Image (tube, rainbow, N blue to C red; front, side, top):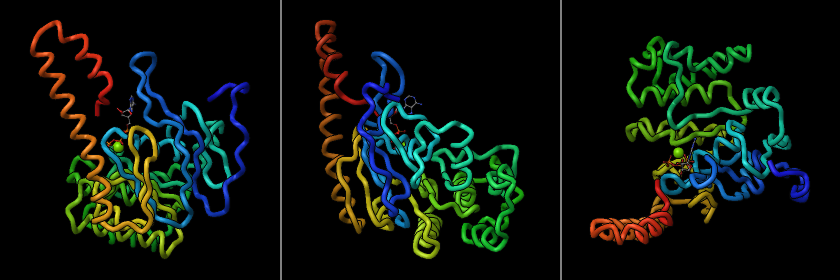
Length: 292
Ligand SMILES: Nc1ncnc2c1ncn2[C@@H]1O[C@H](COP(=O)(O)OP(=O)(O)OP(=O)(O)O)[C@@H](O)[C@H]1O
Ligand SMILES: [Mg+2]
């Protein structure tokens, strides 16, 4: 966090329609020359009761943004609110309670507990909180995600897609007001993927929940109300009422940049292969080319 001397001017509390908000959100990993600026002074408002998609090239900061908005990761600078509660500066215990009560998180890497079976994984957050799941809702989540006959299996006994569905069920089971889903359809076949997307859509339309979803798939993004595009740790564009075609067109512009980067890399490798004299300048160029 910044020192009091350079603290930014107070930001007004978020409007009623904001489920999560960040101002000047900056996240750096590492120190000195190896520092990676994963988020670079991001300002974002996540509308309550809406389905927001986050897209962008690999390494652009999508997962980091989700983790910081959900209070799972500390920020290097800037401020984050969940509803009208500022979470930057909250003590760990308060933050844990807030996360438990209000947030469901589907991790890119599932984060299932290997020694617990599917059902135990699904209800774990509520078990920790000492809360009973709503049985009808839990049944609906389990059936919609096709997990009925897998409930007693441990993660190692499940396919990648089934593990993803368990992670999805775990995020939805307590009916949190805010759901963060990091590539929830990444490992699913198209039918199961569509079901998960339909489920997230219903959570927004029928239950008034707020969903923020990272995806690389324009078809998945088309289920959202708004797409935020990230590049190099910054929000560079947004698209309300997205269609798969429009998102694909927008993504191609990233590919053009990526193609140029690959081109520079190729030329750097050419220079390298020509001998020691080329190494200095080649390293200089390479340093400017962001690694994934
Ligand atoms: N724990 C960490 N330590 C060091 N660097 C990290 C860490 N986590 C992320 N990064 C770096 O921060 C940048 C953003 O990472 P992030 O995981 O947010 O990207 P992403 O957009 O989610 O990518 P992907 O689409 O591949 O999941 C990357 O350059 C990554 O290498
Ligand atoms: Mg990611």
